[in-house]
Structure formats: C-alpha cells, structure tokens
Image (cartoon, helix red, strand yellow):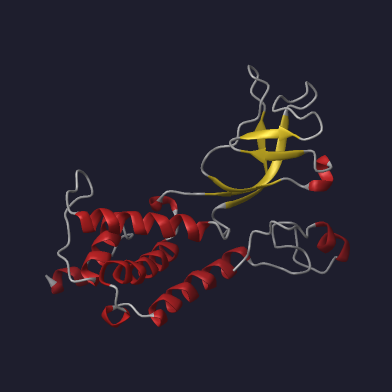
Length: 220
C-alpha cells in the first residue's frame, strides 16, 4: 500500500476526506460515504466543517471576491435580487449616493422606500464576497478549515484540549500557507489598491485614494 502510493499524485481533499480527519481525530472509525450517513459523529463532523468553511470565506479572499459585479433588474418585477450565496454586498456610496442597500435577498431603494427600481435603473454594481461550495475553494483553504474544525470538533465532542491531535500550531501553520498563497496571487498594494486596478503597479496617489474602500477584499 505504501509503495503504491508513492507513485500516485494526491488529489484534492474532498469533504468526505475532511470528515474522516475529524473522526480520526477523536478516535472514531472513518466512513465510506456522506450519503444516508447514520453515524451521528459523522453528521456532526460534516456540520462543523461547513460551519467553519462558511465563516472563513466571510473574510474575503481573492478567489471569492469580485468588484463592480453587475446585478440586473428583473424585467417582470422591476426588482434586483441578490443571490443567497453572497456573504458581503457593498455598493460604492459615491456612485449611488448611498441610495441602495441590501435587505434580505433584494435591493432596497432608501430614497423611494421601495424594492421596485426606477425605469432608468437597469443594473446596480457592487463589491461582493461569494460563499463557495467545498469543491470550488482552494486546497490550502480547505486544509486550514479541516485542521481548525478538527480542533473544535474534538473539544465539542470530548471536552478536553489534552486530547487534541491537531494543535494550535498546526492550525496556524495551515493558515500561514493560505495567507502566503493569497499574497502571492492577489499582490495587495496599499498605494494602488492591488495589481488589478492599474496596468502597472506603480505609485499614483490619485488612484490610491480612489480605490480605498471599506469593503476591501483582503482582510485578515
């Protein structure tokens, strides 16, 4: 088994793999499938993973953040609906003078006090943070979530930090890998707001001020 695995390139960590890591962390046997799973510990492990997977994405990373994303008005209801898998929805207050805000899964016009958009409004752009499913998130992020969830899961199920197989250092090491990947790919720039704002990452004060925003994509 060990020799055979030396010639096999490891694939991405699946949600099933992650659940089994949590189970093994408390001394339980791994499971073969998440479908129709009757083992209570496995169901709790899966819920714990998805809990921290959602929470971790709320920080906003380069792979789940989009700027100036257009939301189009529905031609039938004249409303603009916001997908449920959005963690953060931020509209540039200078572009629309703070007129539009999110309420539930719809855009609300605070000036008219209506969900119905005016005929002149066909779309509204906003900066958004998406909540992605497990398989669409990067492997370093899923790895960090797995280790973090394993520690919390063991504490909830066994109630003793002495029984942790993953330590706080393991969790921090995984987070360091994730943050290093984020910096290498996104290349945040305090002067320009990031490499995607300008064709070249140089010092231009006007652009630096123009691209400062409250809902920045890179927050740790």
